[in-house]
Amino acid sequence: MDCHAFRKNHAGFVDDTLSAIDIVAGQRHLTECEDCQRYDTMVRRALLVFRNLPTIEPSAQFSERLNARLREAKNTPEVEWRIRGPGLGAFAAAALGVVALGYLTTFAFDIAGPRPLLAFAPVVATQPEAVPSPMTSSAIAASMSMGIPAWPAMLMVEQATAQFTSAQYQLTSWGR
Image (cartoon, rainbow, N blue to C red; front, side):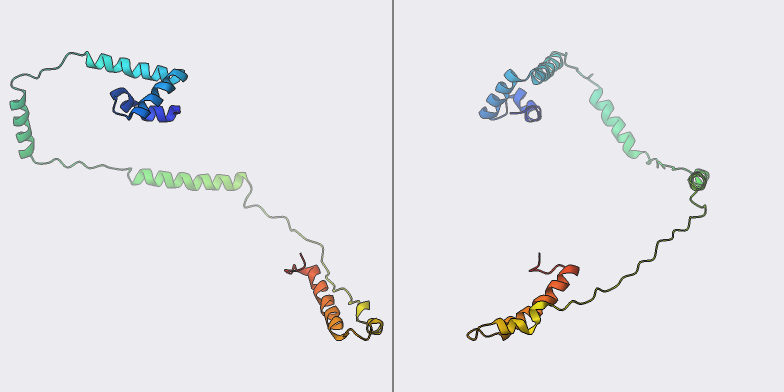
């Protein structure tokens, strides 16, 4: 049991209304934690002082006087209480203060002053020249043996060039 759980269940621990397991856990925690020992001692001493106070006996006419006052309060008209907030003058002063604060802030930080002109150097974009791939030449077809069909390889080489070029500018799912 930690200190938080002990203090949360301390009322039940003192009154002996917890389960046996929780009481034993609380007693074990008291042997280990000095802060909770001081807390437990303080609460138990306060309870002893409170329990040893003399009992207060009301006078014999107490209940009669109380009932008479309750009847009297029931028969009197209710007093309406109004809660007044700030008046119009206070609202106007607050609004004027906010406007003045904004005005002073504007001039303190020179928000209304002229802005410097920002000029950036011109950017010229050009498209690179397309370089023909050496793989699409007729030399690859001549180097193929007669048993392998050449047209699927040629088609794949042509498409690969376009996909490799586009991979420079955007990420495709297979080119990561």
